[in-house]
Image 1: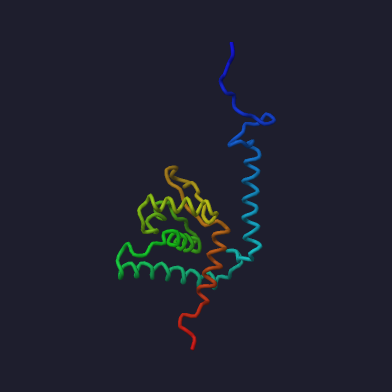
Image 2 (image 1 turned 60 degrees about the vertical axis):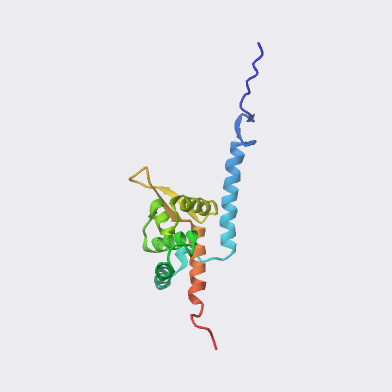
Length: 172
């Protein structure tokens, strides 16, 4: 009797995923993560630990002012005119990071000011880009938190440092 059922592909005794052995898949993910961290380091982006308390307070004030200004703008011009859900979430996560708290996925969706399905797509994109990470809620397995990665935090610090240093009035 001939058994024509297909056996799982194996490489040197290891199961294979997407044509590659699982050990190579894990290794390629580790290499990609190391590459991403090295790139962030080589760009000489400041890390969260490298900023002073005064600078942290200034950055927190700037980020809060940006969030407030965005809501004021929406109040004046009406909803649906300005869409930057990823930026709204990054600002909210940056403020939460500086305040030492975590944001749930649900709260990040609300902060984005777009429908939940749209917000979830943006969250997936931010996770894919290595800017944020999902963490399981310690007390509620149905919920998870979003936090900035080291790279995401460093980029936000870099941006806020540059943006807050820009002159607010044109030079004469």
